[in-house]
Length: 176
Figure 1 (cartoon, rainbow, N blue to C red):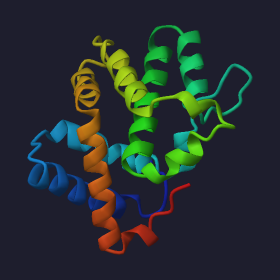
Figure 2 (figure 1 turned 180 degrees about the vertical axis):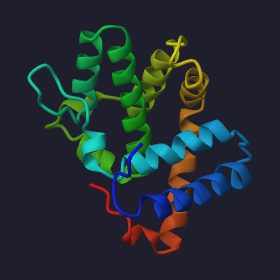
Figure 3 (figure 1 turned 90 degrees about the vertical axis):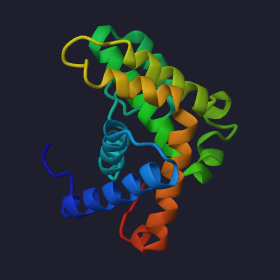
């Protein structure tokens, strides 16, 4: 993976330290593959284009979960798995890191106003986890764990955010 922005490694180390401390020490979740996945999710989603990476057949970026669900159903096999994994990641990110943004994302004038981000996140991770063949066999158990423990991971990511804000890191990490 190439660096997605200058200073990615210091951010990765910060996120790794905060995520490991939060999940292992505070929450008692000793699951290095899960923690590593969450760290990579935070690093990846620093860039808004990673959050909006899925495009429809016309090339339009999809940023609403409702549109992503439609796109997932339109795809076959591995591309379908990737869209469902992305839905899980997006819903976990918004519910865990920036829950205050949900009121805007789910306002009555948006397609997502009736979407339950928790249920769709859990469901999407579960669907993605059913792809267990090469090259997904290592990630499938992590995605299944994210599905089962979605609420715990949401809570943990919210605690991670509070910890980086205490350090003053919130001002250094610009999220869109």
